Amino acid sequence: MTATWLTLGMLLIWGTVVGVDLVSFPQALLSRPLVASAGAGFLLGDPVSGFSVGVVLELFALDVLPVGAARYPDYGPAAVGAVVLAGGGPWMVTLGLATLYALLVAGLGGWSLQVLRRANGRALQRSAAGLAAGQSDTVSALLARGIAGDVLRSFTLTGIALALALQARQIVVPVAGAAACRRASGCRTPNRSRW
Amino acid sequence: MNRGSLRALLRLLAVQGAWSYERMTGIGMGYAAEPLLEDLQASDPARHAAAAVRSAGFFNSHPYLAGIALGALVRAEYDQVPANQLERLRAALPSPLGALGDQLFWVGLVPSVMSLIMLGLAAGVGWWVLPAGLLGFNLFRIATGVWGLHTGLRSGAQVGAAIGDSWLPRWTPRFGRMALLLVGAALPVVAAVELGGATTVARWTAGASGLAVLGLSWRLETRFSPLRLSVLALMMAIVLVGVWP
Image 1: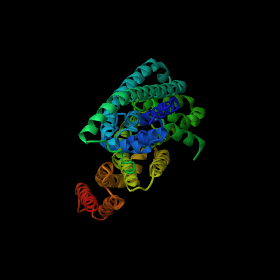
Image 2: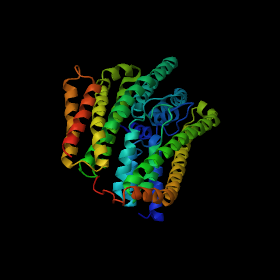
Image 3: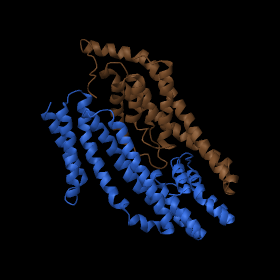
Image 4: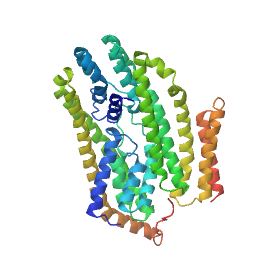
């Protein structure tokens, strides 16, 4: 699997969309890891990897309750990066690596959400006078600022996830793949029909 | 549905857009309330200003059920409910709406839909099961939002009784049981398919076993706990996947 610049750009946009969907807009389940991974798989021309990674991550995500002020992982951009890492390699090697990678990036995403929420709070304090006067422009501006902040957060998180995944593919996957092939006395090709 | 309600519903899609620890979803609620309060601005500007301040105050509930609170609070503003009573209503709504919404959507529907999608993929139904599942979920979510906003606008300060008499508290626990069973059915099937060891018959049978027990849960809900039923579904699925290698 070779990702072109156009594909990477589309993955970056897709990761941003699914990241914003988690909390800000429109919360339509696009951020679920199965959906985010499947979309990334289709964009890469490797839907099997997308579904394989997505299903495993979805089992982790079923355990998460995104309630109130709780800190929860952001699986969307993480799943996009994980599919890039998993795509094309022998699945018995890349699936586990991609899952571990996604869990780490999702944790980073959860932390970035908290940073965004604190930034929204600071903006709120700066706009206290307008809110006390009941100005609708202030409310609209705060909401637009919050969503713009989430777009920036998701874009950055997806960018990091993609950049690290591309690096990891070049370094980790060949080493781990070769080791797995030595243990198995030869590499089996991935079972492309399982999804 | 009038234009103000439609605009409010669309704005509710971004109710958590400015989520902060200070006001939680308050800014999103204030933004969604604006179109509904326009008539008040024309008739009573002073009361509108006070309502606008209140509408953007601290609030939190499940985002998909926020429309119930929005409608009730706006209706109470038009009904000229005293400010202290409005504040009590505003403080009373988050907990029940949060609890019902979390149980209905996060604990019930979302795991159910995702499990059904995984079972469909495992059964070889085709990739279209994914957009179909998303579409079905979002249609239900939007319909719930429309119902919620109308219920709130109709009930005002009596919204608690309206929620209690509605389908919401009756059906919410059933969605939780459905999720337990579908997740229980999906787990072994997904594991088998990821490892490449399940035939189409085994996948279908394992999925069907979960759905069969789901039906039983409705009939026998007073005699069997959801946990026992989900364990039964899981065991049936594991056995059936093993029988058809």
